[in-house]
Length: 580
Image 1 (cartoon, rainbow, N blue to C red):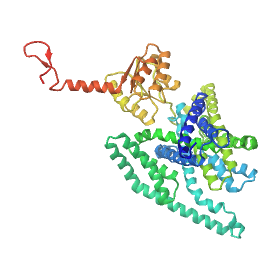
Image 2 (tube, rainbow, N blue to C red; image 1 turned 30 degrees about the vertical axis):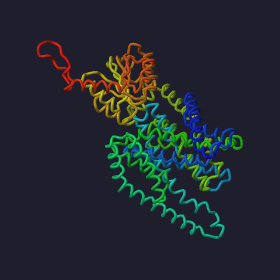
Image 3 (cartoon, one colour; image 1 turned 60 degrees about the horizontal axis):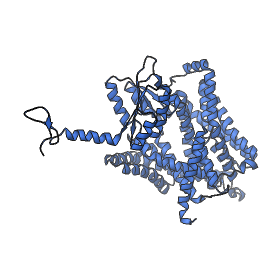
């Protein structure tokens, strides 16, 4: 193949293989991340067949890191952290310290230097945001106290890793340079050099933070509001991406901080805007695409021979992630006198590693702070832990089911940990409204005013809170999940209305609803004739094509306005069109 098609090759082949394996992993009830990483292994240099350009993969991965960090900042909630700060902050710090120490001990046993062990242990200490949030959402735990503790814990871990990404490059030249000691430099002079490097980095970061808080907090939301006022969706999406990547690039060029930190701050400041939800939705497709390429590029770095050459080290790494971290988290949560159910949920949630571990490992290898074997061990541990994590959650769910009485007692002992309110038994013949966005919320208001009993299904926490504040029953989660759908009591409902724009997802859910309750009437929203056919084929009784209904409404308005309004004849009944 020609050299000038390398970028096309890696994007096309990488995304196709990632899609196939991600879909297969999802089918096997594993995280799609496993599929993406395996896709990278397949197109990488350590397996036969097609080999993608590693340099281009690294650059695409850097874009993926920026957009991932932008997404983390966009969903960063200081309010959520402060709500559970008493347990999340000390818990996360102690757990990071324990995991880092365990990783350091393993590295010491393999004959690595102390700094190698430190970076290795640090990479094993942080859980994957993607895996944790997805697991929590599927089990409707985000609105519970244990869910908020887990998310707060994760926020502290993420902040610690952001700080590590900033400081490691500054320390790399000093700590990794053993020649200074060999040439007779004293420990005091080494400590002084490290202190100067740290001070310089913290000054640069402080200047960046000050500029972002003083200027960025005003300019970024103001810019987004002005662009939104133009009504151009393309410009709005472009503005979001320009802010994310522009701030990341500018922060690196002007202040010497990492792309990741700049993107994180851009997202965090954008989170304060009323348009943050729209910004998150509009940037999501590109963010997801580059995130997939990031995981593919990480998989390309993995040498499968590590499983044969260092099996015991792989096993030890896996045990540190799944057992060591979990025991540390369990002990800390129990030390703070939280119930066993909460402690087990936190432990299982954190028994995996993901994107931050990969970023740290790649940075460590690039800075000569971690041997390539360490990166391979981290990748092997991540793959195994992500595969095992759903099994641990299944075990936890089974345990809670078997010990229903104990679980009820534990929930009663916890402070303010209600699950999403179920539909009361006396409510029947109600309408289930799937989606409480712009269309769904307006429809809900109209139906509620007319006395129609409503149950809303929505996966966005803010929209769920808004629906409940409006006096509606609301279930948090994705309607495609059978457990979430059953929470809305479709068996005794009279109607279901799908206000979400995802016709494929709606079709699958409609089919399940019709199987459960054949007499339920289902209406859905579509954006094309093909979507209308898909919805009707899956059991919908009616599908509203948005553009067609808009045309009908405009036509009605035209025909009710002179000179097109039919005029009644003066001398008799009936009417004729007004004269032109």
